[in-house]
Length: 201
Image 1 (cartoon, rainbow, N blue to C red):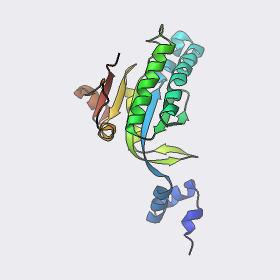
Image 2: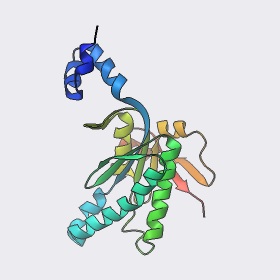
Image 3: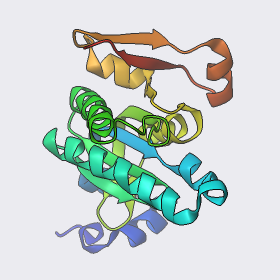
Image 4: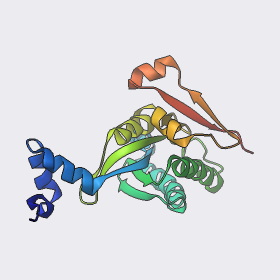
């Protein structure tokens, strides 16, 4: 006998999941995946728009995206949500996400060597099980925490990662350092995280 839930779309399954455990199982069967998350936030550029002009802010955000997106693609990733003030991407593994973040920042410095401050932006990285739905986006703790790190916490030029990301990464690549964030910064986010530093020449 055919399972009637198999014919329901995402919205219908979400509605049923409030009362039907089988709908939860079907959603997870279709959409649950373990993935690395990369979030680049441009909101600070947007907030500074009154001082520099909205066109300048948009041009700076576009320059950051143009540097980060090829790095994401080169490491097997996919941009899920290119927004006006943020970019969210999924990547196969924490190692892929870390290298995409490092390569993206390096590409930005190389393309715009005279604008290191105005084009600097923070990056947040997370890892874990998420619901990835083509028509609705991506959901999960890994996404929420990466957004907090990339959007609300990271200073320009910083790469911040969750503890789950660091555990999934395992060994940190040669020339890369990892440091637990200060207590006052952890208190602000409500969860522990680490800062990545690139010591390569």
